[in-house]
Length: 156
Image 1 (cartoon, rainbow, N blue to C red):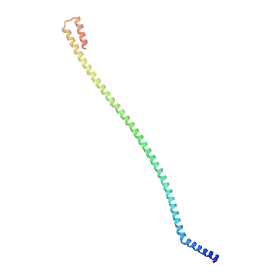
Image 2: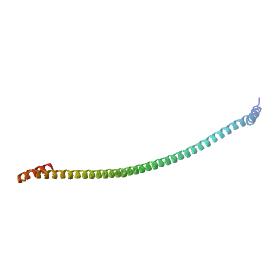
Image 3: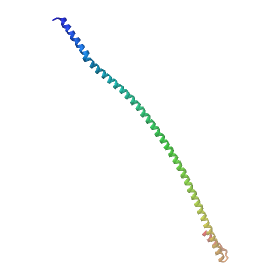
Image 4: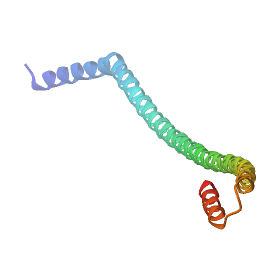
């Protein structure tokens, strides 16, 4: 056998194999590689969109949380202000009520004092009349008068 013919035959078989591979094997492999590259690119793009969406959601949640904290602080401040106002109103009302009670007690004390004075006046008048009556019934005697006045003083 001739080396050139073997080499030529091998060359022909190689080109046929290369042509067959280029015509029937290579396109499906390239198509599969292209599809795979497309899927990977879409996956990376989706991952990037997801990361951006996560960042946006994180910023939005942080903003919402901050707004919520501000609203809570505002509500607490208003509640504290209202509580202080209620306390002040209660103090004023209690003072007003206390003043009314004190005024009522003073009026009652004055009335009671007036009644006691009137009662004392009546009692003093009764004792004076009784003393005068005793003095007039007895005989006129300095010692007896002094004893009677001492007894009247004791009754007072």
